[in-house]
Length: 348
Image (tube, rainbow, N blue to C red; front, side, top):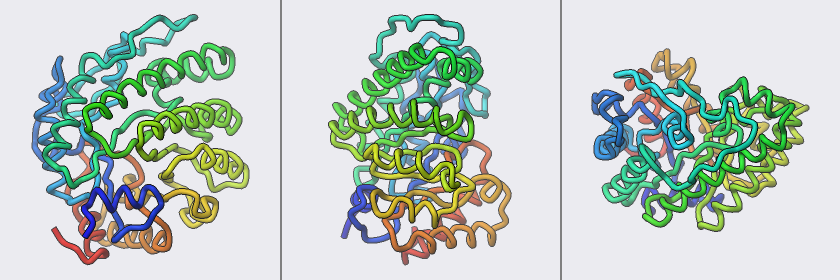
C-alpha cells in the first residue's frame, strides 16, 4: 500500500495513484489549531519549533497527504531585500515597506537565506523528520508574484510597461533568491515537491501579453531549475484561463513543462481538463470564498463532491481553491476534508 507521500507524488507526476490525494495548502491557519499567536511564530528569529508543531497539528486535524513545511508568509522574504513587514498578534503578516518601490537599478543583494527564512528552513526539516510518510511541499512565489511583493503592485504595474529591462533584472534576482532557498531545502532533504504560488501571475491583472512575456518566460526557467533538482513543479496562477482569449496562453503555460496545474476560482474545471489533455496533473477544488468561509455544511459537501466527480478520470489532487489563512472556520475545513476521506473510503 502506498504512503500518502507516494500517492501524492505519483499523482502530481501524472502517473496514477491509489486514491485521490489531498493537499490543503495552509499558510497560517494551522496556528488556529495550536492557538498560538502569530507574533509567537514570527519573532525576530522565527520560531521554527512552533511553526512545525502547528503544521503537524493541522495535518493530524485534517489528514491531508501533503503539507507546506512551515507557517508561511510572502512578507518575510522582503526582509532579505531590505523591506519591512508588520505582524498582527493573531492576524496575517503583511508587507509595509516594499524594498524595490523606487529603484532605477537592481542593487547587489546576497541571495543566500537570511533572517526569518533560516527559521522557515528549520521548520521544513522538523516537519519532514516528524512526518516522513507525508509529502512536504515547498511553497515559493511565482515570477511576478514575488517581484510584486518586492516592488509593490503600483510600481510593478509601471515597470511592466515602461521599464521592461529593469523588470527582467528584478525577476531574475527574485528567481535566484528562490533557487537558493530551494537548493538549501534540497541539501537538507526537506521537500518532495515545489509549489509556485502565483496570485500576481494573472492575465486578468496585466493582460495576456504581459503574462506571456514575463510569467511564462520565467516559469519555464524556474521549472527547468527545479527539475534539475529532481522535484515536480505545481503552478497556481490566478486568473481565468477558460475564456477564448486566454486559451493560447494556457497552452503556453502547460508547455513550460510544469507537472501540475492548480486552477483558481471561476475557472471551468471541465474546460481546464480538456485543454490540458493529459499533459500534466490537475489540482483544485472547493472555493475558499465564499464556500469555506461561510458554509453551510451541505454546500461544502456538495461542492467538494462536485469537483471530485468532474476530475475523477484524470490525475487529480484535491485542493481548495487557494491558500488557507487564520480565521477560516476550522469546522468547515474539517467537513471538506472528511468528505474527501469518505469518498476515498478512508477515515481518520
